[in-house]
Length: 112
Length: 114
Figure 1 (tube, one colour):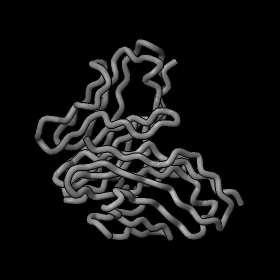
Figure 2: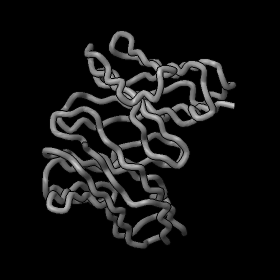
Figure 3: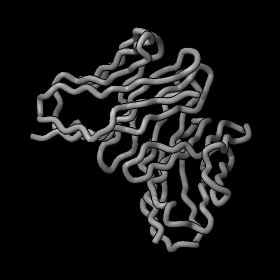
């Protein structure tokens, strides 16, 4: 079946550090891949997405590249800020499907 | 506002009581989802509605859980005879049925069962 695995948190970084949150997936066909972010006290919101292999999604300085050969969609940011502290969820939607599969989430703490 | 709204934002109830949680999706969104997020856990899919089709109830954890969507818009999630393990944040999301199916989430209802 379809599944998403992401690195366990929490991840604690200092401001301006480089961020990587690993995400790998298992799916049949050619899924679309997403990163959602949940800021403290708020609902989830879409951060970025990629719909086919080698696509790069980007938003707010975050990037993730759809790697079919390694079935990965790792989230990266070159210089994190305190305001990036949140929980990040990797997710996939399989071709023709409507049920998005979410990873367990990775909590990020950024210290000033 | 134009986003997904949920009510109440917080609900405290006693074990054994029934609760109803409400979701107002974005106008025009034909798909509606309910998820459960327990403390320190990821999102657990509960149920999915799409248009007038029969809902996908495959994620409901027991027959104490049910949901309906009236008129293709507002949805109510009902938990009967609540148990302490039902304590969680219940999230609702809606989407258009486009290929990439971005979901828009509400702020959630935090349920505490004493």
